[in-house]
Amino acid sequence: AERLPIIKLQPAALLDWSGACGASEALLAQAYPKARRMAVEPNAAVAQQRRQARKPAWWSFMRPGGQAASVLAPQEVEPGSVELLWSNMMLHAAIDPPALLAQWQRALKVDGFVMFSCLGPDTARELRDVYAALGWGPPGADFVDMHDIGDAMIHAGFADPVMDQETLTLTWSTPEALLAELHALGGNASPRRFQGLRGRAWQARLMNELRSRAQPDGRIALRFEVAYGHAFKPLPKPRVQREATISVDEMRAMIRSSAPTTR
Image 1 (tube, rainbow, N blue to C red):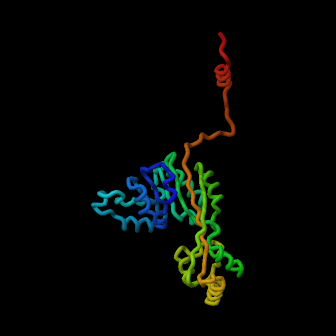
Image 2 (tube, rainbow, N blue to C red; image 1 turned 30 degrees about the vertical axis):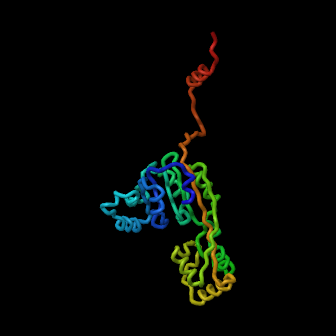
């Protein structure tokens, strides 16, 4: 959100992708009170819950930004319908990121822009080190490096992608509190995770390992790498075919048109 002022374009319509998880509706309403706001919810159950929960009051149209965003499924988004596509902390959860970026690119108008944030590969490095040291496999899904995301954006047809990142350190008073919050954030979604149920002995060992790595003040810390990106949708480039066929008459016409005239 702090990067929005550098974009001079004022969108007439914007799309908040997976808005229920991104928690950005109030921020976008404040930043663009006159814009038509739409939210995409890929999960059908979440979309239905949001539609039922946000039936606007009869007086909502009387105040700027008061009209609730309409909720759409991904397939309901019209191509080239918005100037801003916003996605907060969602891209890292995509099963097929290139396909998702292609959806974003189609939804934007030419010269429209996308802004997003997601988790990077250094997230929860301390917990990953614990699992690796004990031979337990990964504690979570692998996240894509921001440079690879920038390359994927170019491949999807975006122009001038800008990527940067920061590392946030969060701390907890107990390992139980840490694991409870990670579970609320989605748990272990890695396809390489242990497939069975763990026992109490395993849980006790994990707790002890986390306590042994506590900071001097006794709190347990985890780093979260947050990547930020934005890019624009350029004019489409004409496709250049590998082979072209030109007739003899066309070649003669080209030669005549390029030859100097004499008087």
